[in-house]
Length: 317
View 1 (cartoon, rainbow, N blue to C red):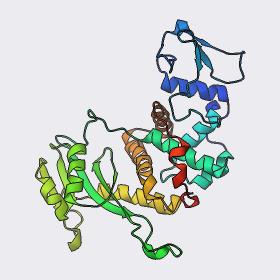
View 2 (view 1 turned 135 degrees about the vertical axis):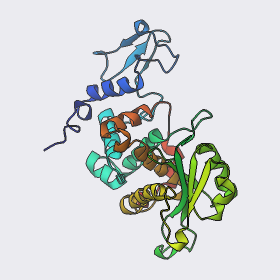
View 3 (view 1 turned 120 degrees about the vertical axis):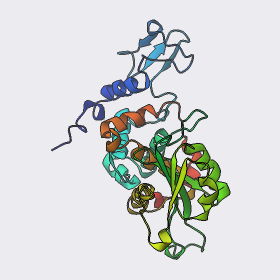
View 4 (view 1 turned 60 degrees about the vertical axis):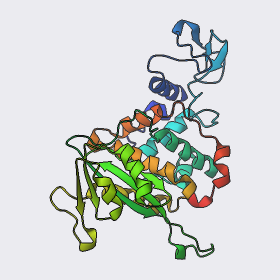
């Protein structure tokens, strides 16, 4: 029996798909991407005059446009309903969905599915601006830790020996969101500005016994540590199980689903896993709402194939 969600008209009818995307990107009505005109009296729908669904004309600048313009959907030959199917699949799959699986389910080419996935990850990416609030706050707890992802050198049978493990660090708010970052190396100088920017100083700060955090923890309301080397994992409120649980999901996705992620694209995969974790069921966000958030995130973001094709490898499937 088909899922009630996947049987929705937006996944099967192009007009319904445009109506859905327009409702997410134009909540107050259509806006001309050419001149910024938002007057409904000066924007008309070209229904019956064209075979292009969703085509509108701005009578202020006399130019045509669709909701695709200025978003990740721009210049794509795929139907918008196919885009929504892919977005829903990536939002509903806790550990991600591989390029090969997308290719089989959507009936498109491998490179199309690969680039489609990257553009959706771009929509999922949270843009950290000057006014983005940090994680945590008074009475809240932030955990921080680092891990390594990638293949071991001995598993690369036909490649020259080289360091293949990539460093990832993440501050996580207990019961809240996560922000993970690919860092070139794990040092206090590298992690200090990241933690200082993304963790509120009024938070309770929890880490392991690594000396890296010794010079960082004093900046918080309190700094609790657990000694993993002595097999200590919980001492009262001091533990890092939350961030380690996130890393477990990340690694199961990277190793079990994607199998290999190149360093050049690791930050995009981190955005994908951050997005699903920060918009999970426990925080009151279900698959349908998560899909809507990803569609809203498509606005104002463009990722061209030319910027990524030189780094394309079949192993990322």
